[in-house]
Structure formats: structure tokens, C-alpha cells
Amino acid sequence: MNSTKWRVAWNTGSQLMGKVVGSGAMLLVSILIAREFGSEGYGDFTKITTFGAFFYLLVDFGFNAVYLRWQTENVERQTGWATLLGMRLVGGTILMFIAVAILSFLPQNENQGYTGLVRLGIILFTPTILIQGLIVSANAIFQKHLRYDLATLALTAGNIVAVLLVWGAVYGLSSRVGVIGVTTSLLFGLCVTGVVSLVFIRHMEGSIRLSLDKRIGKSLLVAALPLGITLLFNQVYFRVDSFVLALTRSTAEVGLYGIAYKMFELPLVIPTFFMNSVYPLMVTHTNRTNVDELQRMVKKSLTVLLVGSLLSTVIFWIAAPLLTYIRPEFAESIPLLRILTLGLPFFFLSSLAMWTLIALGKQKVLAFIYGSLMVVTVLADVVVIPPFGAMGAAWITVGGEALVLALSGLTLFKYIRSNHLSEISNS
Image 1 (cartoon, rainbow, N blue to C red):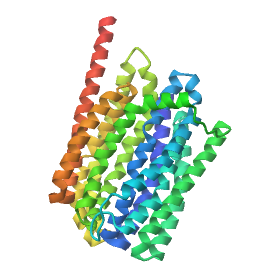
Image 2: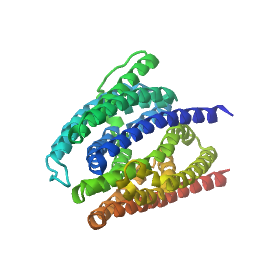
Image 3: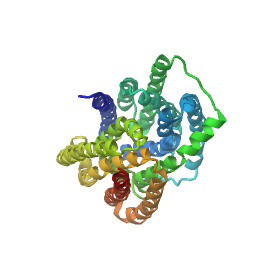
Image 4: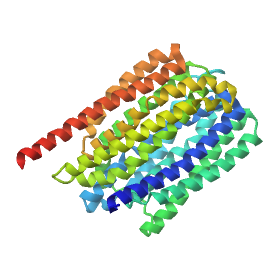
């Protein structure tokens, strides 16, 4: 195995191992909550965590992709990590207050919407936005050095702490306040991951500096803006179904959809972490005049992700009835999970198309694609979910990602084909 294949395999394997631990921990947390608190308790938990997850993407904003590109293009900007960290910490703090402000405008009642208990949980969970910014910034260093094994160790440490604390909260508190205990436990676990990540970075870099260099910060923001907007559009259309469900359907139905979606998310880590390992190598190949190597990398990645998606689809379709072992009431989640599972090939392959286009500097095209689909998806969710509930949300999720793959894949195909023909004509 050559060095490139070995590096991709090692880092993909390290990330998958970390995600096995991380996803296993979150799966255990989800099962504990669902088993002890039922669909309504899990519905409250889903509302709390999905509300905060939207802001994770804002604090991310695609800065890492720009920072990694700088490492191969501009020697002067290779010291920009201190500013990257500073921007995320300041931005994360601002987003915390924005999240709480938005919460005050959302409706609430006993059976749907954001109840007083859910609001308290969201407020307690908002510091995770800031911590997530720190962890994502640390991942930029790990990705730069292709040392995702260290990120895996940090993630594992945090998840161990989180699971132990959640276990105590679930069995030591009543269902009324147990979800709050779980939320706080996850916050502490994330803090541990952040601290361990900083320890590793200090060992690798010699020190940890914090800066807000205006010139570097402005360049970083301008360069990341197209990708950041794309990721924002992506997050809105990816999460809006849960938001509309929370506002228009019962908490129990939110829980039924939430547990199905949690299971559906498990295999989605495969394309995410695979592309995290491949992306830095793609960037180096886009700097060359010959696109043959990039084409070979895309084709090999396509094969790996397609096979992985089909295997995942079969496995999760067959395993869906296991949801009833959590509680019999989750039998209603089985068809939801199976519908979502049909979309796995679309999600796997759209990840490849998206990150390849990013490596090629086509963020503006992606922003247009995801922006258009965000509008379509939001309108579809608002129209379909109130009368059809979780079933409608599941089908919209699958259909939306199919459109993403069709548009981004066609764009990528046209770009590679045109550049390949240009090389032939110039040779």
C-alpha cells in the first residue's frame, strides 16, 4: 500500500473508530432516555439537542476548509490558527446569546412546541455552541497533520464521561427533570473533549495562542463566506423538519421521529469522515494542471461510498424492527427509519460531490444549489408536515437529498469533463 492510501486508510480508520465509540455512546444515551422516559421524554430531548445543533454549523462556517487550503497556498497565512480559534470563541459567545433570544419568540404549550422544561434544557445546553467551536478548531490542526487518532482519543474521553453521568441522571432522577440532567451530562462530556483536544494541540504545536488579527480574520471570513452560506443552507434544510414537527405535532411524535433519525444518522458518519481524510489530498491535486489524479481519486471514492451506502441500506432496513426492544411504542418508528434508510446512497454520494466541488473552489455554485433546495424543502415541510407528520418529514428528507446529489453531481461531472477535454486539446 502506497503512502497516500495508507494515510487515507489510517485517518479514516481512526475517525471511524472514534465515531464507533462516539456514536455508540450517543446510541446508548438515546436508548437509555427512550427506554426510561418514553417517546415524550425523548421528544423533549430531541427538541433540546436539535435546537443547539443548528448553531454548531454557524460556529463552524467552513473555516477549517479555508484554513487547510491556506496550508498549501500561502506561507504567510499558515500561522492563522490562533485567529481561527479566536474568531470561533467570540462568534460562539455571540451565538449563545442569539440562541436564547430566539427561544423567547417560540410558542409553547403542554403537548407541543417548546415547553418550560425544554426551554430550560436549551438554555443549559447553549454553552455547547462555544465548546463546539473550540473542538472544531482543534480538528483543523489534527486534520492538517493527518492525526485524527488524537481527535478520536479526545472524543472517546469526553464520551466516557458523558455516558457515566447520563447513566446516573437517567436512573437517579425522575422523568420530569431527567432530561435536564442528561443535557447537563452531555455538556460536561463535551467540555472534557475540548480540554483533551487542547492538551494534544499544545503538545503538537508547542503552545496555544489566541489572536484576533483583523487582516487574517477578514481574509478568512471572506474566503469562507460561500462555503459557510452553503453549510448554513444545508443545515437549515437538514434540520427544519424537526423544527416544524416540534411546532405543529405532539411531543410524542417528535420522539418517534427523533429515535428513527438518530439511528439513521449512525451510518452517515462514514462519508463524513472518509471525506475528511480525502479532502486534504484533493486540495493538493487541484493545484496541478493535470486533473487525471483528481479523477482517479473521485472514481475510487465513488466506488467506496456507493458500496458502503448500499450495505448500510440493507443492514438498517433489516435491523429497523429492533427499535421495539427499546419500548413497544417505538414500533411506529420502524417505517420512518426504513424510509430514511432509502436515502443513504444519496447522502453518501452527495458528500463526495460537495467536498470535491469545494476542493475545486466551486463554493458559489454549491451555495446556489443548497440555497435553492433550502427554499424548496422549507416550503415542503411547512405544507406537508402539519397534516402528514413524521411520515411526510421522512419522505421530504430523502427527496431533498436526491435533488442535492443530482444537481451537485451534474455540476461536478460537467466541470471534470470540460477540464479533461481542455487537457486533450492542449496536449
